[in-house]
Length: 386
Image (cartoon, rainbow, N blue to C red):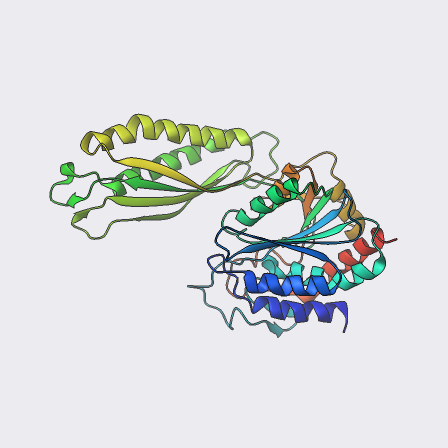
């Protein structure tokens, strides 16, 4: 079977694992581990505290510093409330396209990397080639944060990271950070006919949201003059507001799930410091005047740094050589790349499929995109072979 045929067969298997972030990814990780071990890779599994999720880190080639990482996340977004034309967890082929949840984001890249693993092993690599497959990227890059801590502890120091996010096989050298939070409001329950005797958590959550919307407008004026991002400023999004049990009950609990995507570290500090002051000086005094135990607590879901474009970028130079690309772009969505960059690696995004298809019903990747990805990986093997 050809490398493309192998890739499609592997992708068929990967799509069948419903690795939505809320569920376990262990069956898929076991599948990846078995295939990589069969190719001769040294495989390590790194479980989370629950024992229901795991990262995989595998290596072909010599045990030295200066290796190259091929990285992808195993989790996918949910399919609920989406109108799919076929079973999202069964690969469907038609007219040169492969449909299924995760085909482009980003199991297509993982399948191509796995298909090429035996060929890499046969080449006698002169540099380490690592495979890093993580959990929970879609909900805050949680797995990758654990992985980079583990690599530091083990003193594993790759030089380059290629993250196979769907970029239509174009090089992406920068993206915004992604900071995700859940802010919890703890008030005092009561009867709706006497609002002054309770602390309405939903109302204080609404005031907090209003402050976030005010800050969102303020951030537009803080955009760097040379920002290449679209939009060029740090953004804030309100993802979910929850609270209350009935129309005539003062709710004692409410939550706001929100995120911001900073273009610069100072913007994150600006937002968080403002919200801290607003809660301390305005909201909490009013809440605690009625119920001293009332409180506002913000839980950090994930604070993932952005990928910062750099004048000197070995990953960009390597992937440009492999693909023939003569430029690199920036994107507004977040990935795990900044975490690898923080470790000291140069990093870029380059993978099959388009972000325009990600997270949508009838997500797909084309055969032609997979072929371009395989071509890049073949040339990578040639580049680091003995």
